[in-house]
Image (cartoon, rainbow, N blue to C red; front, side, top):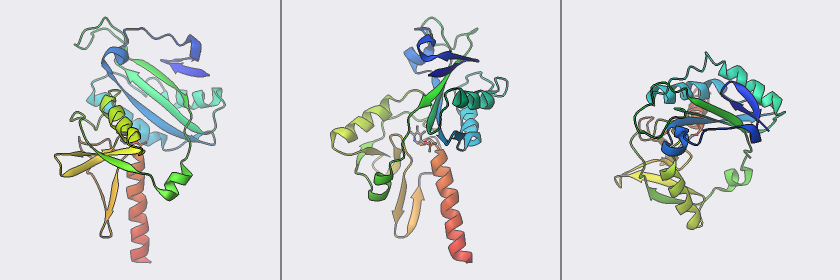
Length: 223
Ligand SMILES: *Cc1c(COP(=O)(O)O)cnc(C)c1O
């Protein structure tokens, strides 16, 4: 498997990353997972826009245009002869001796590689069981950050309870999102979803669903 490491393509077993890359010690980085269907990216532009947002909010200096990231990702798909699945991509603040402040002369580290993603057709039709779980994450959930301990622990609680997803809530009165998914609630014929603020990660799927729901609604309304 070929991995995009910064601006180079390397074999997975030759992808050397410093043990002191800040992704390891601090989860100091951001990421994206972009769906690929039949060798083509799905909504690549929306993902790159969100990546730029996460980078800016995390104050990581990485110019995706300067690095021709869109072209490089396309090349990654081609080099791997990758047809269906996802491209996982992360950008950390880079490698530096462990110390909390932002390092001064460090370049960010980018890695991107293909991962399997399947479409859960049966679950989509039949539904899944979910548990309610307190949202114990930080207050910048709008950044797609590598710090996923809160998400991972909530997901495992769901699995341990025989369910498949944890629906997270805060202050006992509002649902935010799932551990790795956004939530829509249908109640009394009304579709509700948490506003896109610092309590949720504004999913591309969520945005797309909103547009789609609005289209369906308008079509029914306007005939
Ligand atoms: C990435 C993510 C989402 C949304 O994923 P999309 O693929 O953009 O729809 C929702 N919630 C969390 C916590 C995420 O990390």
